[in-house]
Image 1: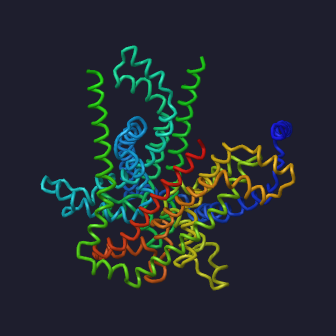
Image 2: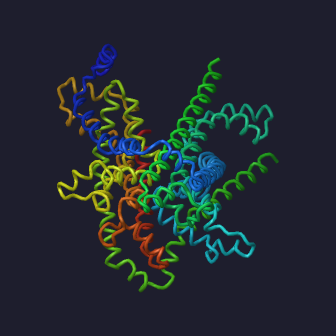
Image 3: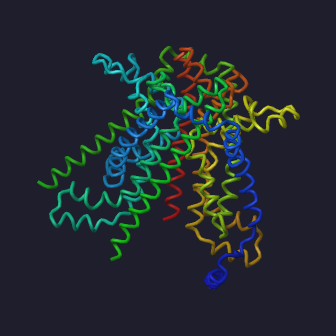
Length: 289
Length: 272
């Protein structure tokens, strides 16, 4: 009784909560957010004002830098596509099938989050080098994996595994099975049912996962740095170029490349967010009419 | 006939998934332990009892505790402020908290160099007080706090939003204080989510490499965390030592993974 009256009370004055602690909690939040995130980030802008636009542009469009963006972007894109394919498959298997070892498989998905990236990096580099367990299987055919863009992509696939699985899984769990059954009864093959009935529903979640892998992949350092080998114009990734510039005390150069990466990952996340939202609205809109 | 072909497809998918996980996740994990023990227990033991390795382990643990404490406090306050009240700019704050997620760890480190390093605006102030942040322990802690900043709040915000505010409002109207409301009403509801966020934060803090690498300066025995120590060993071609030290982190990662799964299951069963 009492609770329902309070609910009504709250609706009348929706902006003034009766719960105490507003000033304290918001104060602590804003102070910590400013000290740890906002003020340091604002310093990037402050530092950049000390350099001329021409200098900034020259570093941005430097041939080595352009190549590094390309390596980072293309490898991250490939890794994201591979992760989407296996991510959907894993989510499907984990949600829809029951088999021995399912819980183990499910529990292992987050290993890339739990395992330090440097450890993953040296393990993958050694495994896929010419003498490594897996690399030695490919070496006789002239296929090199470590110290090539294939190796970089591999490391990014490793790091990106949890993203797509974990964004698709909850959506798949909640999916209404009646439409699938209807499609099957009407004679659709399992593949057609998946493509025409299930996939559209999963699309926003898939896009979100894809965007997360892509953004993470572009900025990833620890797991990639060892396997990349850091050969300029070949396997030098953008975050590594920032590191190289810092070691030369070229702060302006490092900051310019950092700005490109920041803008790139924001554009990716923003676009994916908008796109996923649009698709979701279209599906929901279609269901209402 | 239909059922039969469905089974083949099902089994093929399951096998494919197992193959993918074994090749991509399990073999790398096992290879760390195998390479670490390649030259026997004596060499393994020597590598992990090396004074530099132990010092690096200590620094990693100290850094992790700092990150965990700071981000747990922040996470609770931020989730409380953002879910218990409605005010202007709420969404902006939520977005700002997530920024560290969208940034390369190398950039996170760079940002602190630009504030506290030789060219930073805070450098003269630090010098006056004879303090060092960059290439010293405070910088390592700051960079780690930065990259793990959203972990706890991100788990708590959706949970507390779903919970609603009715119970807390009732308690407040009956005269309970803020701390009382939090510890008696809010905390029991969010404890598994809180633990989950703390576990994720710990995992990331233990293994953070890029951000720490930028601000550390790689002074052996002083500003080397365990992942940085591994990098040095690996680049000196001391592979067995590098993998031996890595195996400490692998064991920690497995423990974290098990804890995470337990907490997740408890949290799910409580919601249902």
